[in-house]
Image (cartoon, rainbow, N blue to C red):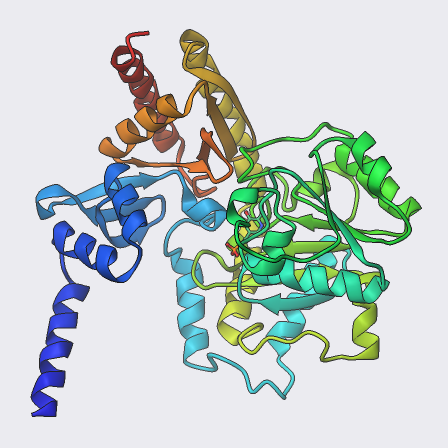
Length: 432
Ligand SMILES: Cc1ncc(COP(=O)(O)O)c(C=O)c1O
């Protein structure tokens, strides 16, 4: 009897796994995942069932259960620098899977050593700790900087985004996600790009300042040319650690392997995640110098993670970095980004009543619209015409463009043409 019931349940679940029926999947999302989010997905026109990812494309079931190709200009918010299911990385991980998926957690791992050495070589930061996500990397950075410096305060910036676990949220600059919570004390917020404010709040008890070299979720906000170098100088003067959150900018997206390298400076702590493992497996990384690692001298197990540093993530990171360097993806991002931004700017000149600004570095591009309604009209037009984008989390007026760095120019052109049509459509819709 029990067996029959279990068999029926498994059969029902397997039918759902392979379902092409959008209404059925929406209903399960509504009942078992997140009712309000389900309504938003439907309203935004994103109710498609994804099945397959390939380079810059996602194949999904659209209305009438028909397969349709979508061009992915969102790239999972900066994860997919190498595209979906990059076959070089996938094959390397398959090979690793047959050898060792996790680790013993007690023996030495030569690939972990190789990754630490490679990253130390590329960044000049000698220590590496691996975790499983961006927010976890941020959590570790907060802990290590407070414990290693024995100081109490952390300075962060308004409009920043560092993740949604309690520590990461405490230093993220948007209040809406903090409602009802008791967060970390001694976190001070200043305006991004404002050195005067920093000078006023930094003191002997400041453990660290954390910034993104380009605010991603804040709306693709690019700081002044001397911002990061001045931050570096101020941190040095005050014996305070500079933490750079490159979770979204890192691994070539902005035209540099790491965006801070544009400015010839070095952080004390560098945070990576998203693109570091080639879009195949979760990862997060904290790279740091001796000052930030001080606490590990006192207690080598001060911070640990069971899954952090598993063999699959290590292999993915090693191969991703090799692939990124040997295909010079930072250069590709820089050249394609320049082309993309130039074309978008040219088109937008004729739509000044809709587009406020096009900005970006490499293939981290933001299009700021005059209003949220115009942004919504453009998203909806793009998705109906097979192009995936999204707005930045803290600034819904900004459409973010973060395609794989390997994207061909012909697909960039396709975006540009469809974007121009979406502007025409919006102009008509709002009778501008
Ligand atoms: C700059 C930055 N930091 C941290 C995070 C948090 O990463 P995760 O979502 O992997 O926790 C994000 C995610 O978007 C991010 O963009």
